[in-house]
Image (cartoon, rainbow, N blue to C red):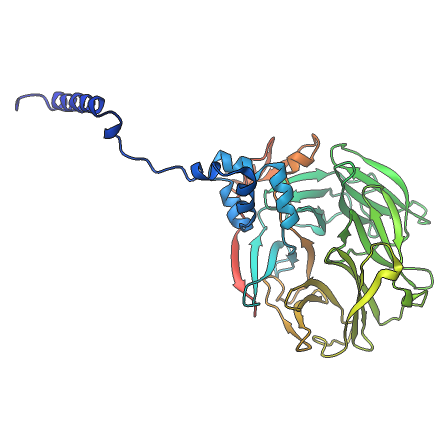
Length: 438
């Protein structure tokens, strides 16, 4: 036996082991670790969804890659709708670094913990948007609209969480210096649309065009108001964009555009405003508070901020003044010092953007401001910020056949990839960190 070839001895041992396995059957096999999805799949779908809805965006994104069953559940239209309805409003910041060719869009969540301390969860979307130079337009349902820097550059509608985007071609006229662009959703037709207004050739009127995603073309919808505003931080409410403009006598006007009816309308301002002329020291900003339209009036001369809420949408008598700040404004400057409210916390504090240079927090009890250290807002340069609620809304589901592309973060030569379905491949989870506010 000792003279047997080593390879033959190995073959004999393998044959003996095979016979032993046949005799022992299942008892011989080593126990396997259960699939993490097995027990979870046995739960009713409603309970499984409720559990997932309580997870952070970072954890949910990773759960999509655990198994096909979890990916299918998180990609389910019902789950996406529920998640969107509970998604917290965050701040999407485009900062201006020292290297002006490097644009750093960041999603910043400001949340409260049990001790009423404020925490910032930051996700960096630098590699999850389709272009490096762009203007932030606005967001809707977790989708963000970006505009290229030049007149005939396209616009982009993207989901920075999934890295998906659609290219919106420019209009025949392109975007002039006085063009206005806005993005929204029609609940009635379940369509996403991009609005653009521009001056006519004779500069006597403004014309409006709209692009419905899935049609591949722009169409005229008639005249538009003769104003070209800069949208406020959060301007989207009840399927419409809102902005402040000024009449011929410099009276304050609230204009809207409804994406369902595709019509411009005007909302009444608070009764006490009447038709009074806007003072040179005054500034107006619109926002959203608790599902209601918010109007902030800042008077630089008297150092006073007044805030009004329209409790019954469209009803002038429902405007209610709920807060006046008359002292200790943050960082008085020789020029107009504008404080724009962007978030309201349950502990009574209000987060504001000051002149697009600082993010500050106002404490109503202490009647004082403090600067908030949010990444990207402390530099010698200003920044742009819009309201944004992260979501898993896939552009493939919203595109109605229009080509969807995905940002690739790996090989730069293969950065753009056409996709045909929502999956776990493509751009990864954006870099994430959590820090406590000062």
